[in-house]
Picture 1 (tube, each protein chain N blue to C red):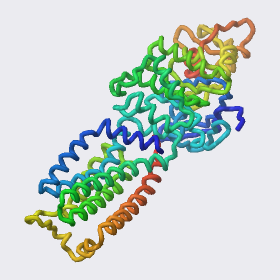
Picture 2 (tube, one colour):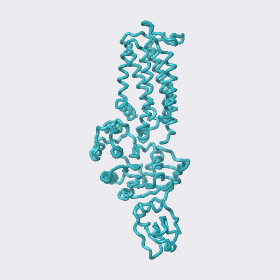
Picture 3 (cartoon, rainbow over the protein chains, first blue to last red):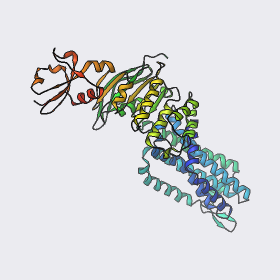
Picture 4 (tube, each protein chain N blue to C red):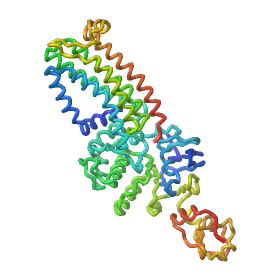
Length: 213
Length: 283
């Protein structure tokens, strides 16, 4: 599996360098009183794994990887690990920047919520990527991301002076969640992320194992 | 584990809506080269996909090195397909980094030696290479991890005659230890005649022929007869016939020819062409 993860990392730096520039711009925006943009960036990081499936299909690497001495389980797992690496790294990076910049504590929680949405996007999208070809998937993918962004919008904070506000985030349930320690929040989020992706992985594995080239 | 045959195909069937790979059985002995020939759409690539695990058979069994679990033997296979995809922005150095993690017996020095021999750049992205160059990359990779069985599907198509000849020499050297085997499919039948020990001919999903190359060339010959003369030939001797109003080119089983008839030598390509015509002729 290390070969496949290495391939994903090499592919990112060779083919998707633009996201690094995108991330730097987002960081600058996040530090300059536009906190909602970092949430977008974190959710977008949920797309990397499915983008990888598309590029593999178009280059023919999906077939080549099946010829390597690696199991179907490893091939599918490598996509989830790669995608999860992006989600966790972007969440951690933005959280660190926000802490260092002295932004309100609630924004860390928003990062965590964005991480969950990114994982949800990944968990739903990857099995779709294995079922449909890249072209057929496009319509379903647009609808899916629209839905997720639509729901995520309810969580987006708006700036009222220096106080972050959001209708959903101010609800009783979330006030209870946010009163917990950050580490508890983080572990809870991690558990949700893991469960979502494990279920999705098992579905993807069944689909991929039946696929013929 | 000791094995006699590198590859065994046992009653393989694969059914599609309008095509059927029908009850294919043959074996490739260890240390030998088998050429897989047939027209476009005959089922060669379908069979190779089944052998390599890219597709599943409807029935039958594939055994690699005596083992019917293909996924356990992938490390011992070197596979070059007609369109082995490589990430477009990768170059040979990056590919080497990936493959040395995938294959336990990956030989980095050997890989770059082959690249040098095939005159391939190690830092140019694959999207900038021609089809032939990409194919050479895949061949170099297939030869660089001590594969016991090379499976090559149209691997030399798209290569110029000079490099094709060199690559055939490389294949010949590769199996000289007697432990490695090659299954190669190609439309360039003359290439297969140079290198192969065995010939397997598939036509419209059916196995027409599987035998030692020399035995095939000894067994079959060509007669050219007018329509009037053909009646003197025992029907059972006629394997295939290509007929026009004026003459017939007949592929015959020399062992069944009546005395007095001397058949010309037939190349593998002649045998393939005439066998595919079948035993039917104009009166």
